[in-house]
Image 1 (cartoon, rainbow, N blue to C red):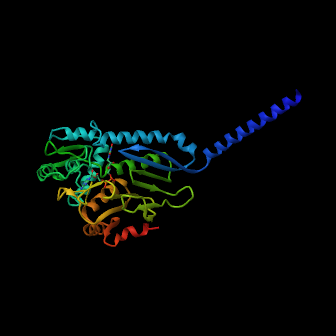
Image 2: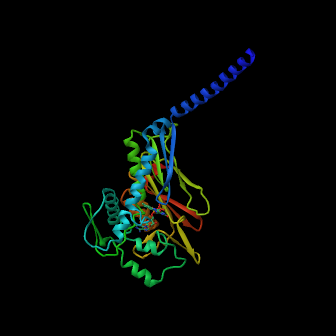
Length: 345
Ligand code: FAD
């Protein structure tokens, strides 16, 4: 009997040792500095956040839930895919009287209008009726090119001159003006998540929403965050270049993900307000590095609309860190502004 008891005790001791060492291993794990990954869905795409901390520190601050709540709030302010969002209600409201808007919506519209004026209207957040007409908005995608009449009718509804912001009062000059913030609101979401993380005292992080990113400090290995610029091909995911953006935001706009082809011609979701049609030039991808993600997001679309020559001249004139990839008969040609050069790995 004594022998069995002894055996039982040894087993118990062994099992509890295993259990305790597993617990202590788990405890050690949660106290080790690592890159804590938080991810989820937002704005019709995904988000990934990496915070250099211990799992315990991140869990204690309840950051994941706060990020989800923040992105839900921004979605409810700025999505044209949610029928009762603040922006959708503004778009549906036929009044041409000034309407009071939230601080978040004011911030994004103010920056979008600023970039619109800077670019001579190439970035134009009232271009939504054309975006939707060509099938890149919340409505279903038509399988054919819109008729000239339908396109001309949509073009009558666009133009930054028909939208005015005065403090937090927004006014449309025509009842059926329609604002589309797809080019800057995702970047705004990145900036607000980055601000939330910093407010919680974390200084080393990466925030990414649908490809728009903002980085700060270092990875848990002490190295700078490295970002791969994607080769602008639609059939595969491969690397064009590696860059070190340091404490900045980085945004890429391109015509190789969101497009359709008719008779071998590509029609992408980037619309040139001057022609009323999707861009049709050799520039296929632009990457911009700037302190704020909302600005980088808007500028990358702006430069895509301008095309390679005008875009490069505009970016150099305005001291923008930009990388341009164009297609040629010999493959892709890459050009960057002087400001972008220090970021190559
Ligand atoms: P970018 O180059 O950053 O932006 C291109 C977009 O800007 C185009 O898709 C068009 O909408 C607009 N645009 C085109 N030309 C111009 C121009 N000349 N001037 C100004 N704007 C122009 N997608 C879904 O499928 N489902 C969703 O539920 C959904 N919800 C969203 C909620 C929010 C708040 C936002 C901002 C977007 C949402 N989207 C959704 C859209 C999706 O995220 C877009 O495809 C994405 O925002 C486009 O970003 P991009 O980086 O691909 O292209």
